[in-house]
Length: 342
Image 1 (cartoon, rainbow, N blue to C red):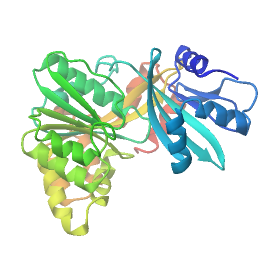
Image 2 (image 1 turned 90 degrees about the vertical axis):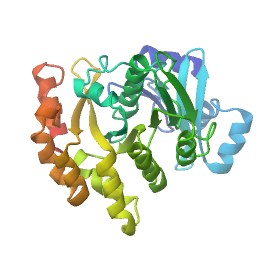
Image 3 (image 1 turned 180 degrees about the horizontal axis):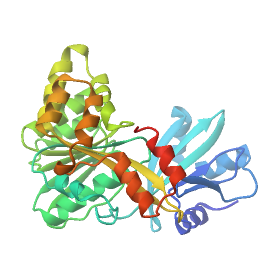
């Protein structure tokens, strides 16, 4: 049986982002967005359980058996890992996310210049959106690093878990992990407002109270960065309003229109050389965009982006086509992405 140390070292050598330990399947690495088997034999139920539970302490095993799911951070000499262990059809399995040790820069991620401009805003809300595993946290970490490198600002982050570890540069970054340093995103955000912040970064806006206080903070002069699961920018209004009671829709629209500075919507695309590159659609909130947010459906934001090039806005079609022209992705992959944006 492969040891934990061997498994993690092999995954890092293969530049994997995730490891899947699953009964009835070989050990799988996610490399370049694809699942790749790294063992010939399929794991038995016993092998999957043994490998998964090896990741836990005795106390953690007791909690896992009680709750049937367990999330933890593992930090050792080889790196940092986010782990979920659970039951799947009565059999124990695990998923391990391999976390980068230091944040990448905006330039290293090949993000457009407008992302740096949005990071330089003094107040308001900037959202990084996309579906699961599209690099939203990586982009937010790059924006925090940009602020930390160029400005003497106090940055407070509220994360679940902390993925990228920031060191103080021109500014000061104080990172708080939900469950360890604060009870919830909401309590952490509420406390952050009393900590003299210039910038607050929220790992994810998951509930109405968090969204409401984040918008209020952004409106009162704090720069707020956060991620949100949305399949495209024109669905933003539906997504945000889905959290709110019907009686609060008007107030939420007003707060969003007044505080939102911009949105970066991402797709993480496999490249021809086996890597990944971000394609992104960017909305910069202009007076026209504010009017749409206050009064209309989100699909009107599509036309704002398409006509907003002078403000630095970029459509997903433009971003993906640029990657095709640079021969970084193939046309088949591009078509599969753009079918959702036409």
